[in-house]
Length: 327
Length: 283
Image (tube, rainbow over all chains, first blue to last red; front, side, top):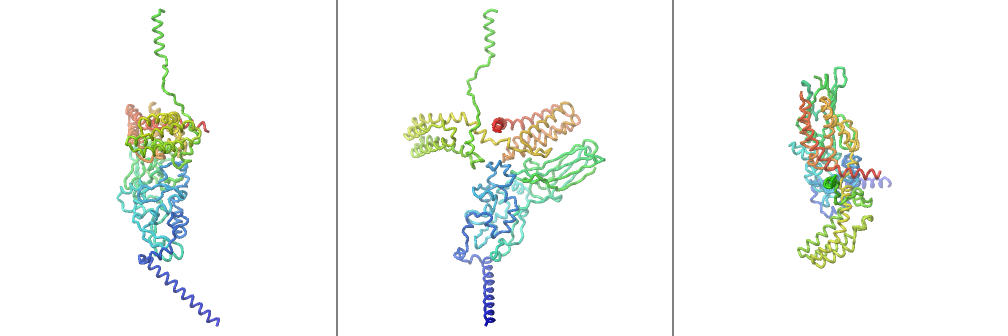
């Protein structure tokens, strides 16, 4: 008798399992392939209306944990609270900074600043919520909230809403790679990480929301240098980055180029320095040589050249490369 | 000395004596602390100037609509003017005495007669209250709240790569500049050339400094632009030549002074001096 009962329970559980798998499979099919067949009334039952009332980033993270974690590491997440910004804006008092440090809705035009959730900086809602709807690069039935496709999400003009100078520089290069291609590299992944929702969606190309800030190398900034008569001539070429390097609308990132001249004994004869910065109109344009010429004082046996990069938000400089040139 | 000579001498003395000027003296006092709550950073918006604009709009709105004979809107602006005037009078307690609510109400009553002459006459009494406050406080308010303070700006010296206060940085630039001119004057061209490199680097750093407040390139290029570039190139060419030409050298120094230093000093320095004196008093 107990064995018969156990068998029946097992059968029941198996049946429930089959139904669950079949249910998920059917839901998967409709959600991913034929979502237009799902009646709106059915969707209404699973909608979470508060998600369409400008939720905070933490709420979004309940389903989109991976994207949230990447964003949290980005400069966008600290655009309002970063020490550099607080100092530069004289404790948030400069009105000119507000639009892009706390944008209400990014649309391709310069945004308006918002009044709520300022500590979250440029957060999920700033870029994905417009006119009461969630927007993104895909049309998604997404049971808790529908998402509407807008092709602007994969276009540079979207980023150009705030990064206007950089966008203009990129446009001038004629290069097809968009901002998103380099700064939001995509990989096949799930948009949601929460079960069972994550099982209901096909893997899609998901952009990296850390908004990568390229690490420069000698492949990116190319050096040519030579001693000629009483001069030391040096050329720098931004070979790979299709906008000025560095680039910024109002921040002050810099490349520091140090040139030290040594004599035969290895003693320093002279030294000089160049600051390559957008705010000084000296940043390196794409694919265009920038030349420097130095008059040599005394006998010089070698030149040591060091290139360092200092982002707008840091006082620290990172080494890009170091070279030695002899006559 | 005969009387004619004494008279002539007296005339000469009188002619060269300081003649009293009847111009109005202006005393700039730092605006009261209570006003600061109507300006950033304490307020999200510059509420005080917005309040001024509101009153000005209603004041002007009365006369615009009287002219158009749009009396419904005349009455509306008259009521709003009294309301905003009353509100403004309560914003800064230290300035309460500048306001005359009765004059505002009398003007509103006159405006509501829809008689331009009566409204014009009554506006004079109200206008006097505005004018008195503007004459005594307007420059001080603009200096304190509408001109960003240079003394809060930090500059990174490109030579030492250390961050310093703006005033200290300007002293540094001034020293570097003297290194260029004094050495040139003494015929020490190599020293002058080295000083020029340092001075140019510090001068160009000011572009970054301008961009801390000015968002458009045109503004910073007004101070550190093509003329400055031309002057620096000209100076370097002279100092790198076998025999530098003093005429060309000093011409470029003059160009730098006129188009770079002078532009900025004329625009910003007066306000900066006033702000600094207030800041020193508050320290």
